[in-house]
Length: 138
Image (cartoon, helix red, strand yellow):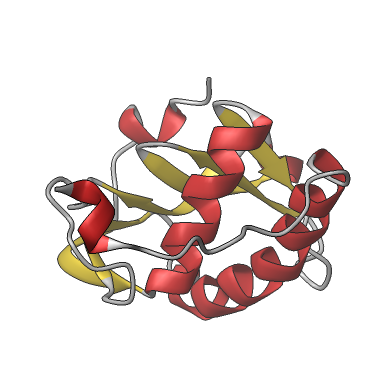
């Protein structure tokens, strides 16, 4: 598992950063189906990769021996009751231009994960909603 983001000094730490629920939910689903660590090379980001783990999402520069650029960590998801609300986390910036790639990385991640999820479970049919009959529960 990648851990350099915990070993290298940061330029800036931004607590209370909000991650959109659609990104958070998709990553959690992908990690549950594809394994504890996923590495993506999103198109349009040249030599940057995105490493997804349960406790951190890290953008790394593969040309510089996987030096971290930006990382989302310390997700506040415990006791989460609504899937549509953003999730607070801590944003770690390791590079002066890290903020320039953050949104592009998450936008590029979404279709990449969608393809990976579709390939992982091609035979699964969509879920089915069952009727709730309260009279039969008594």
